[in-house]
Length: 202
Image 1 (cartoon, one colour):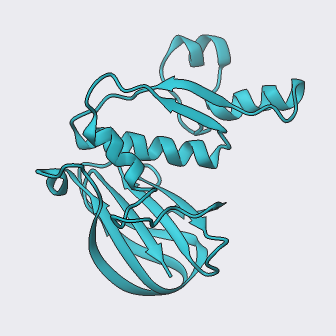
Image 2: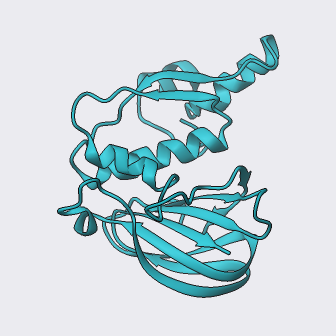
C-alpha cells in the first residue's frame, strides 16, 4: 500500500505503472494535485487470517500504515468471527487490559531489519516524554532489531501477542512480558517469530 521499494510481479506494475504500486502515496499525490485537502478513506477491507496470528499481524500493520500515511478513516469488513483480526486493534488500544493506547502524535522511527520488522511510533501530548512503539515481526524466526529515532528515558513495558500466547485467550490480547530500563535514542529488542509487540516507554 505504501512501500516505494516493494515491487510486485504483476501486469499493473510491469506493464501499466512501470514502478512500484505504492497505492496510498500515489493516491494522495493525485488528490493533492486536483483536490487539495481531500482526505483518503478506505471503505471496506479484510485481509483474512481470522483464526491465525497472521490476521493479528496484518491488522496491526494496517493500522500503523493507515496512521503513518494519513488515512482519515478505514472500515474493517469482517467476513465472520475474527478474534485474531480484532486482536490487532488491541496492539494500539487497551493493550494493558485497561485504557493504555498508542499516542496521539505519529513519530518517525526506523527498524534495522525493515524486511522482517516494521515499527510504528508515537508520542502522547497529555504525558510528555511518553513514547509508544508497535513493533511487528513478520518473520517465522525471532528477530533482534534496533528501533531508532526517538529520545527514550524511563521504563519500557513490553506487551506481546504471539501464536502461543493467543492460545486459549478470549478475547485475544497482549500480555505484559517484561519491563526494561531505557535511555538514549535507540532501543534494541528481540521480537518473537510472527508477533506484535507494543512497547510503552514512560
